[in-house]
Amino acid sequence: MNWFGFILAQCLNALSQASILFFIACGLTLIFGIMRIVNFAHGVIFMLGAYVGYTANVVTGSFLVSLVVAPVVVGLVGMAFERTLLRHLYGRRDGGAYLLLTFGLAVVLSEVIRLIWGVQPLGTGIPDFLRGVVIILDQPFPLYRLFLIGLGVAAAIAIWQFLERARPGLLIRAVSQNSEMVHALGTDVDMVRTAVFGFGCALAAVGGVLAAPLVTAFLGMGTSVVIDAFVIVIIGGMGSFLGSIIGSVLVAFVQVMGAYYFQDLALALMYLLMLLVLIIRPGGLLGKED
Amino acid sequence: MNWRLGFVVTAAACAVLPLVVPQHSLTILVEALILGLFAMSLDLLVGYCRLYSFGHAAAYGLGAYSYALILTYVPLPLPVGILLAVAVTILIAIPIAWICTRSTGVSFAMLTLAFAQLGYAMLFRFRDVTGGSDGLVGIPRHPGPLGIDWFQSKLGYYYLVLVCLLGSYLLCRAIVRSPFGAVLAGIRENEPKTIALGYNTRAYKITTVVLAYGFGGLAGALYAAFAGFASPELFFWLTSGRVLIMVIVGGAGTLIGPILGGVSFVFLEHQLSQVTDLWPLIFGTIFMAFVMFAPQGIWGILTSRFRSKPAAPNSDSGKEAPGAAT
Image (tube, rainbow over all chains, first blue to last red; front, side, top):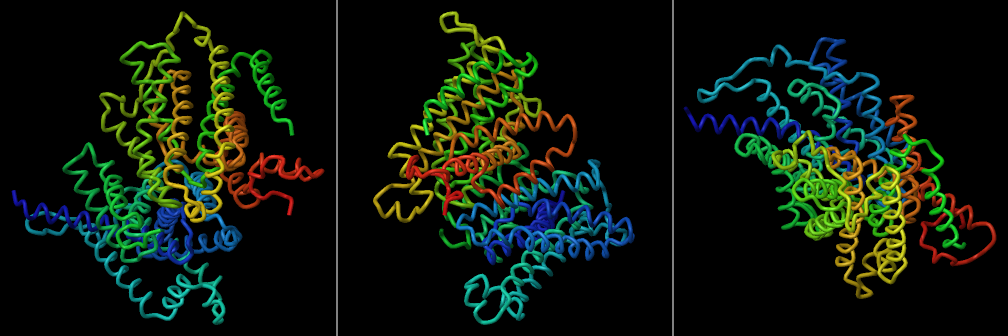
């Protein structure tokens, strides 16, 4: 028994899990950082991504096409929600209204999904070209999980570069710091907000499409994931992009290692981690104290 | 407005109600009152401190499981069992309140949710004690003390729940109208200012969270004793979500509103879930509509209409959210 290879496989496993979590948590933290909106519907948006991806996969027969179609569709749904409903709450003094409205959206959207796709779990299956197994230090490791890690890392770098270097990224950061000033300088701040909300939802949809082959698309997949995502964002610090990466990796490691070594406590470990972080730093690892 | 008269009339109407409805409706009436009490307990947090708890199911579940576990091992009379369950809930709530009130807003919502989910997870972890996904069944309602047994019948239990609800309402009303309640309103409206005035707002918030858990635990214990079982559902986040909906739709910060919200939720659910499986879609939509267009809730709408007639300024110390007037 090659224990080193085994540990490595576990770590890779955790990293692939972190990759899916990152897509969800990153969208959540971007939306919060820029709009001060807590999107409780983010888990259901993730689920919607998985279901739309399933249908796109069935229609076109291509996993890669579904990986493009689902985020676009879900992003548009998110933008429509922001434009028609969420926008009207911006003047409210009470930030809790966002939490409540998006919670309502979560309830409604998951029912709509149930009506369209039914209650049966829908398995997409791993696409053929990613079905293989790679031998790493005598341990077999699924190629699909390596693909997830690669995609996650690539997306993290791309988003980071986009926020730091590109002009739209600059605008987004500016809006998060002082939206009135950006507005006064002639930028359509409303458009930026809509775009950010849509972008965040699209990222969650990518996560949904990627998770579907592993867990199948089922009703309720959004619930556990939204709590995971919130735990990540709270651990990393609300609104911190880097924090969402760190949080995703931490939570994924706790989940994977916990499921293996402390089976009984696996469910509780993540919450204990969050409690620990919040007791030490109430604002999260990279967040500001509030 | 003469609230005493209103209270007595409502109490009398509730007391007569089970005598005029058919026997089988009694179950729904009892459940409606229990959920009304549960929703009112959350209102202490949402309406008076603006602390959005997404895990109030923890209070309900703690109350229910405490009662169930106590009664599994010790054959205590029902009132004693319920009081003990409330005491256990309050004891467990103290550390939870201490940790949760370290943060506000979203973090508070998520921390409360995390504790509820932690409780949910613990039910499966200690399945030998809690019964895991099967829950605990066959929870008795023992008679006593002094041989009192009227609450063993369904009708008698209805009156027990009614007394608990009315008593809790009077207690909560007294709390929110006391100087303590005034500080809570201060926290809700402007916490930094309240701190600057020299109040230790954290202590007030901890007390309120513990109180809310206590009343929620009472509702949970009453439910477990009535239904005769406790299932993990009670701890699940959907339970928290539903009670939050009841509070908002009924009217946060009014105590009566959430009771109305809880009661009407149970009736609507019972009626509509027989006719259509679209019920969750309907209540989700109703909830969103209330958040968007009527954040003051049903009771808020009713009272603001009532008040905007002739002028009786400051008749009720103006605790409601700004309604129709100005």
